[in-house]
Image (cartoon, rainbow, N blue to C red):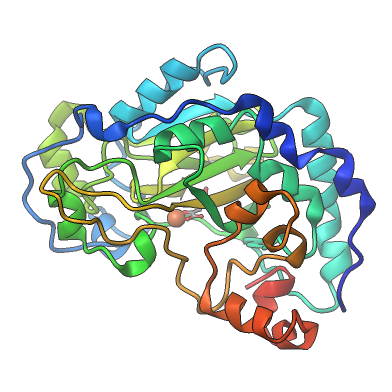
Length: 363
Ligand SMILES: O=C(O)CCC(=O)C(=O)O
Ligand SMILES: [Fe+2]
């Protein structure tokens, strides 16, 4: 069942990141624009974030982001925008990269129809079976910003890679606004809300479009400045006129880099005529921040470099990356879940992971 590792994946050199190393940035030195006087929110997650009913996403206060930043000429602007808002939008992929990755995605269903039900939302985990995605973790348009936001060249750890598609009404509507879990569950909301300084984040996500996304598509959407508050009603009270729900729109190759605790969703197409709605593809990376960090009061922060929850395993990484001869690649894949460690203890026995559907693609 172990799918042949296709040599085509080698067309991209993983070590291209070497050319773009950035100096270490000490985020602890900069004031945190998201320090807010807060009430602790009582309701969290999706349930508390649909105050207008489950068929209405958020408060329906739609705002827009500036055009995607060019990471080669506007890296400082992108970083500053991230610092202010908890997310930024950049242009990440070339036409050739898009063609290549879309060709791989076209094959997911063909290769996997016998053993993976990818489901209508097509949540799919390509890490083990599709080395064609390896270059994306080290992409020179995204990794330097990920390093800078997380606070150092050596701190990012890739802990999940998933692919998602939306193929029309059968793929569903009305995903609730929610923050994603951070720090492997080790940090409470109260700890995140009260720590000084807030940054750098515990986990960082990148959402990269493989198709154009405009008002006819569902979009990844964020609520700016929400990384310390998980309830959008509370946030709206705190931010007042500044509150907004921002669909990320842009051509294929556009990437949103976002603190994993920022409230977000898959926003239904703004175009409500279903006959005009179009499909969408993206891939999503999650990076944990490794290394020790101390709060301003000298206390060691919890939740440094943690894996995601492991049931079912969403982050199994292949031997070619975990045991890579390139020390930076091996370091990137060195935060290991319990299932990953158990698998490695078997000597990478395929039988051990065959029982996990997520190892082969779907959930
Ligand atoms: O599909 C999307 O646009 C967002 C999905 C999401 O919320 C997630 O992956 O955590
Ligand atoms: Fe999410």
